[in-house]
Length: 400
Ligand code: SAH
Image (cartoon, rainbow, N blue to C red):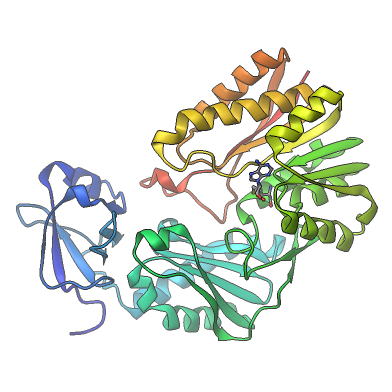
C-alpha cells in the first residue's frame, strides 16, 4: 500500500458530525461510533458519517482521548511525504511573509493545528531547529521531518524536545536529544529585536524560551522604563532586558526557579545591564504580600504566571489566583504606574480575565484603565475553526 493511504475508517456519531464539517480538527473518543479496519497508532484514516459520506482525513491513535486528529478536509489530498513537505514549506513561507525572521532568529516555525500539522511544533533558535513531536503519526515521520527541516532552514542541527505532557496522554514515552546534525550547546544565543538571550533548549521550559511573548515584550517596552520595575514570574528575565533597554534603573526578577534566575542574570549581563538587575527567588504570592507589608513601591510590574487553569474544573480556582496576584500588584504600584499582566490559560477568556482585573482594581481601590490588549505573537496564529489554539492574553493597565 502506498504511504499515506488510509488503512481504516472512523465513523463519527451522527450528532457529532457537524463539528467535523465545521473543521474542528479534533475528534474526541465520545464522538466515535466505530472504527473499521485494522488500524495501528499513527495510521492515516478517513472520517466518515454514519450514512457513509466522506468528511475528512487524519491520523489515528486509538490510545488517545483524541483518537483522530484531522489534517485535511480535501478528499483528494494524500497525507504522505509530499504533503508533509508542502505543509512545512508553507509554514516557513508564512513566517517569511510576515517578516518574522527579520525581527528575530528565535521564532515558532510550526504551530501544530494552526499550520495544519497536528502533533508537531517546530521552533527555530539561531543555528538550531527544535522539534516537539507528540502523536504516533509524527513520531513515525521523525527522520523525514528532520531531513525536510534541514533542507528548508539549513540549521546546524535538528534537536528533539518531545517531553511535553501531551505525549504521555498519547501513551508515548518522552524523547530528548539530537535527531540530525550537530548537538546544540547547553546555552544557545539568540537575537530578538536587537537584544540577546541565552536559551537552554535541552531542559528549559517549552522548547527553551517563551517565543509566544516576543511581540508583547516589544510592545510593553515603553511602559517599563520607570525607576523601579518588578518582573514577577520572570523565568529567564526576558521582560527585564526590554525594561532595561527602555531606561529602567532597576529591575527585580522574581521566580521560584533558581536556575531560571541564574540565566536571567546572564541575559541582563550580555546586554550590558549586569548592574541593574536583582534576582529574588520565591513564591510571588508570598513575596508580593511581603512587599505590601513593608510598603515597597514600583513604577511598573510585569505578571506572567504559569497556566493556572489546565482544565475546565480548575477555572474558578485559577480566577481566584489571578485576582489575588493582580490585586496585590496594583497595591504595589505608584499612582500612574503600569501593570503588564497576562494569563496563558486557554480556559480563561479575555472577557473573564478583564473581569478579574476589574475585581482586583475594585478591591485594591485603584482606578485602572486598559491601554493595550495583548495576545500571542504572530508565529502562534489562531486557527478560527480551532479556538483551543488561542491561549495567551494580556493587558497593559494604567493604575492610578
Ligand atoms: N515572562 C517569562 C515567562 C514566564 S513563565 C518570559 O517571557 O520568558 C512562568 C514562570 O513562573 C516560570 O519561570 C516559573 O518558574 C515561575 N513560577 C511558577 N510559579 C511561581 C510562583 N508561585 N512564584 C514565582 N514564580 C513562579
